[in-house]
Image 1 (tube, rainbow, N blue to C red):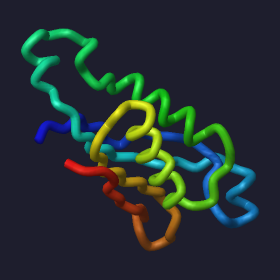
Image 2 (image 1 turned 180 degrees about the vertical axis):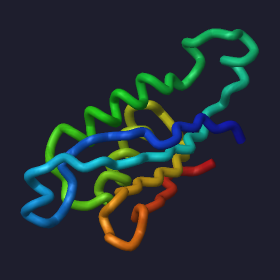
Image 3 (image 1 turned 45 degrees about the horizontal axis):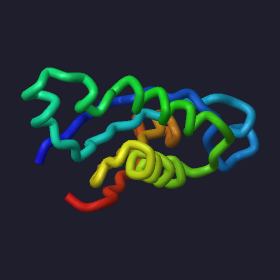
Amino acid sequence: MDKVLIRQLKVETVIGIYEWEKKIHQTLLIDLDMAWDNRLAAATDDYQHALCYETVSNRLSALITEKPIELIETVAEMVASCLQNEFNVQWVKVVVMKPGAVPHASSVGVEIERGHI
């Protein structure tokens, strides 16, 4: 299986359940593994057959920052749904990390997989 990868997409957004969190921006780091058949893009060296990292990154950043969200679980589901519905990605693994959320951990996060390989 071919995959397109994006690592540590940094998104500054309003995220959290506490009142003080709803007044500040915090950083989320997102890792994506997206099933994508790269053979045609590689054989033709043609961008139109590739999954564009920049387009995906920009769309997800806009999605995550359009309104405050309380849970990183919600972010993960939103990202997976967007990739499947808007970009026709058949399978995706999404990891959402929230650095500094817990004092004694460098980061906390969730990982989901959606779709079929």
